[in-house]
Length: 135
Image 1 (cartoon, rainbow, N blue to C red):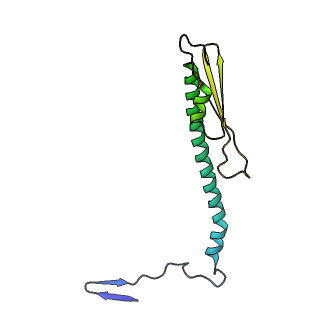
Image 2: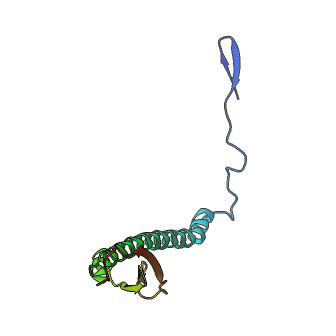
Image 3: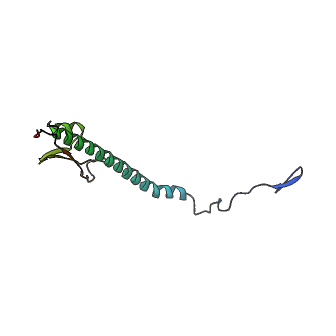
């Protein structure tokens, strides 16, 4: 159908091809959503798990650094590391010659106890202060 406008002719837009569904295509959008939605949920859970692992790694690095510095100053390094470490982690401080080495291990379970956990480890080393023999 054409419309007449002053000075020019215009045509009315028609529906794009493929917009009309055939008799066997009813509900195809719902089926596609039902197939794709579990994949999106799985991807969201994987993203949450990855972000949780990165945050736990950062906390472990901070705790190891604090424990090593405290041990190098002659203080209790394990206590200093446990203040900063994520809940449920272990802090180990070793004195080897003129350095203090702190290791922090954590096993985060961001998506519940039924899924396997990963072990995140961070290590820091600090030189002993002159005159300090360690805790």
